[in-house]
Structures are given as C-alpha cells and as structure tokens.
Length: 236
Image (cartoon, rainbow, N blue to C red; front, side, top):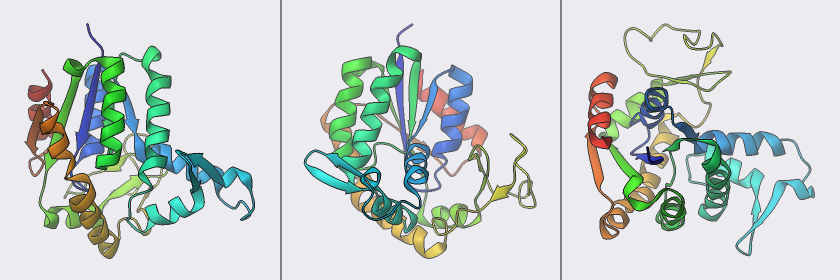
C-alpha cells in the first residue's frame, strides 16, 4: 500500500484537529499538527534574555525572532511563513521513513507555504497520494466554536462544545484539566484570525486548482460523525 499525505484545511474552528485525530486513529497515519510544533518552539525560548542566540533562527536570509513569532501567534496573526515552512518541511522529511503516511492539520496556511510544502510532499509521496480536504463553515460558526472551545492541559486535545461537553472540566481522553486558550480564542482575536484566513489561507484554493490537485470540499457544519464519514468517502 502506498504511503499517503492528507492535508486538512479550513477556517478556524472548522474541526481540522478533530478530523485529523479521527483519521489518524482510523488509518494509522501520523498526526502532524503545526500548532503543536510551534507551541513546542515557543516554550523552548520562553524567558530567554533579548540577546540570547537561542531565540533567533536564520531562515532564507531572514533573521527570525521566535519570541516575536509567539506574540504574533497569541494575537491571532499568522507566524512568518518562511519560519513555519522551515519547521514543517524539516519535520516532514524526518518523519517519512518512520511512518505509513501523515495527516497535516493546520499547515500549509499561506500561498508561500503551500508553494513549498506541497512540492516537498510530492517528492516524498507522489502527487497521486496527496489528498486535500477543505472543511467549510461560516464566520459565525467560527466565532461560536472558538469562543466556547476548551483544550486539555496535557495532550492539548480540543474538546468540541455542545450540550454534552458544556460542563466538562476534565478531558475524557487523558484525564487532565480542561482550559481555554488565553488570548487565542477571545472573540476579538478570532476576528483577526478570520481575516488572516480569508486574506492568506483561502487563496491556496487557486494553487491546488492550478496544480491539478483535487480539492474535496466538505460541509463542516455537520456533526463530527457526519463530517468524518464524508472525509473518509473523499479520500478513498
């Protein structure tokens, strides 16, 4: 069986992480979450002095201040594309020989990234083994879902908000405390994230179409189970 690379993208709150987790468990593919890679980098440089060499990285002739990238991320703005792309491609190459395939949730997020990440995936997996899933929801749903969302403290599982989960305080998956992402899921920050998505992520659709990569559009407003059924149908 050929190795697969599945890209899931869509607006904030579309359920990318949830669907990626379900697919990972169902198909045995590696769950590649860009947000977790970034969070790991940000924690690594937390509290470092301004003149510390460890908080800087040189990428494509550009000097990246990782602590400034963290501030961008916290306010809802996208991190510098060259920095994110560097991290993503490095990790993709490291994982290829040790996994049966990967699911990318939240990357690529800009035209700059997609123009570099997809060719890297094509080189490793072959164009025919790359599947694109586009989860569509309205801006109103984005704001509602994100402003009510909780994640767990330990594994960062995202818990979907509904009547059954509304009063949960402990993650049912790993038993750790459920918390809100301070700043990142505030209503004003979410509006910034929606604008960033419309301006910088949505134009990737044109790239996929121009490069003859099939875009599987899925209604993300459905129940998690119904969305998952549509996703499975699209990739098989």
